[in-house]
Image 1 (cartoon, rainbow, N blue to C red):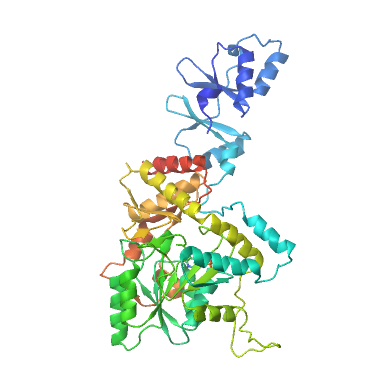
Image 2: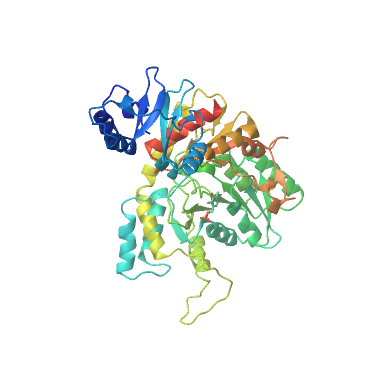
Length: 487
Ligand SMILES: *Cc1c(COP(=O)(O)O)cnc(C)c1O
C-alpha cells in the first residue's frame, strides 16, 4: 500500500521538488495538500511538463499550477467502487479521503489485479526435478518410479503400512467402498457436513447414503448421532456396510468413540482425510485410524499434484487389490485377462513427481496455514461477532482453511462474503450439508438432538483465504477488509 504522505507536496514547494517526489513515488503522481491537510489537487508528470512549456522554470512554486478538483472517493469505498471509477475516468489510481478531505490511502490499479483467493497451489523447490527425471527417463506413463516412491514416502510420513496413488481423492473413496464390497442395496453412513465427493461414490456403487450430523466441538461426525443411526439401523435389521468419516478443514474427527461404536457393530471405517493430510488425532496421523483412509491432492488442498489422491491402509491385501482394481482389473497373464470390472484410477508418473516434491514441504505448509489462522484470530480478537472453528485438545489440525461462524448468522455470512468480494477477496460459505443438497433430497439424516448442528454451521459459517502462499500484504488487506465490513 502506498502511504499518501510519501507523495505529498505543498504549494510552497518548487516544481523541481514536486518532480522529484513524483519520480520517487513510483505511481506517477504527487498529492498537493493545503494548509488544513486536505487534498487540493493531484499533480502528474504531464502537469509539470505543461507548466514548463508555458514558460515556468523548475524554480517556480507548485502554487503556480491552476486549481483542479481531484478525483477521490471516501475512505469507506470498496476496491470494486475504485475499479469502477478508474474504468470510467481512465485513470490508474484513486486517492481515498476522510470527511475533512485528507488523503488516507491511494488505491492503485495493480492492487486490484491481485485478487486474493481462498487456497491456491504452492510449489516447493523439488517438484520440477522429479518431473524432469520422469521426462529424462521417458516415464510419462501412468505408474513408474515416482509413483512407487511417492506411495512409499507418503506411507512413511503418516506412519501406515501401505498406500496406492490414485487419479483423485474421489477415485480413492470409490475404490475404498469397492474394497469393502459395497454394492447395490447396501447402506453407507457418511458425514453430512462435507463436499459432495465424500458421498457421490456411494451412489456410483448403487448403494444408499445415510447422513450423520456433526458436533460443535470438532465440526466433524458426531459420535452420539452415529450411535443413534446404528441403533435405528440395527432395529430395522439393516446395518451399513461402511462408515465414511470426513475430517474437515484440516481437523480430524473424534475417532476413538467413533471407532469404538463401529467396532461394536463390526462395520469398517473409511476416513475421508482429503482435507486433513498433516493433521493428527492424539498424536496419530489423520487418515490412518480407520480400515482405509484417503487423501486428495487436488489443486486447492494443502499439498497438490494438480489432481490426484491416495488410498492407504495397514492391510497389504486391501491396497494390492486397490492397485489391481485401479489398473482395469487386469489379471497377471501374458494376454489381457479380465475376471471383473476395473477402473482406470492410477496416478501418472509425472504427477507423482510433483507429489514427491510437495510432500517435502508438507510440514512447512502446515506451519504456514496455522500461522495464518493465528493472525486472523489475534488481530480480529476484539470483534465479538466472529467465532473460530474450535480445536479440541485431542486435535492438532492444519487449518487447511480458516473457518469461522458469525453471530449474526446467515445475514452476517452474506454481508462478509459479499463485502470481501467487493474488495477482490475470495471467501466461501462452509460446505452445504449433503442432506440439504437437492441431489440427495429425501435421504435419511441422524442427529444427536433436535437441532442439526451442520445446518447452523452452514448458515453462519465462512472460510477465509488461507493459502500458504498468501503474502503479508494479502493477509493485512484481508484483515483490514474484514474489520471494515464487520465494524
Ligand atoms: C477434495 C475433497 C474430496 C475429493 O478429492 P478429489 O481429489 O478432488 O477427488 C473428497 N472429500 C473431501 C472432504 C474433499 O474436500
